[in-house]
Structures are given as C-alpha cells and as structure tokens.
Length: 125
Image (tube, rainbow, N blue to C red):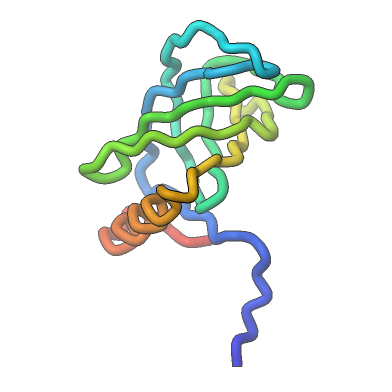
C-alpha cells in the first residue's frame, strides 16, 4: 500500500552550490538584449529551482522569461523558465523559477538528478 501523499515534486538541494550563466530572454513578452548574469543554484526539482542573482528583478509585476546554461554533470544542459517569486537575502536576490521543459526533453533533467543522487551531490527534501 502506497501511503505517500506528496503532491509536488521532490526538491534536490545541492551539496555544493553551482554557478552558471543566466540570460533574461523577455520581460512582459518583449525581447531584451541578451547579456549573461552569473547566478547561483541552490536547489532544483523537475518543475522548478531556487537561485540567486545580483540583480533585483520584480517578478510580481513583470513576466520575466529566462534561459540557463548549466553544467550539473559532465553534460551541459540548457533550460528555460519563468521567474515566479523573489526575496532579498544577505545582499543578494533569491528567485523561484518555474521550469519550462519541452516534452521531447522531459526525461533529461530527471536523468541528471538521478546521476547527481548516485554521486551523492544532492540531498532530497
């Protein structure tokens, strides 16, 4: 008998933070000049992630679409998403991202997360 009542995906906290380049693609549907911003990834799930940036962006009043080029394993991975929430914490700005993964690439992130779990690089919560 399965007694798991979890309704949202597991979040995986990285034991060592990962830095990567993030690009703001559009703000309110308007394309913006692409200039990479260094971001720090704290945790990730199949549907979202938590990261910090040195920029203060207001996702409550703007629809901000981003692109991220990450190297969580030996394989580089590009993911797009939407900023959903933010908060300022210790001089940096933290954001929740809703990931937008194409159906034809839907198994790639779970595979990467399994590899990281097998290598002991993430914690499940």
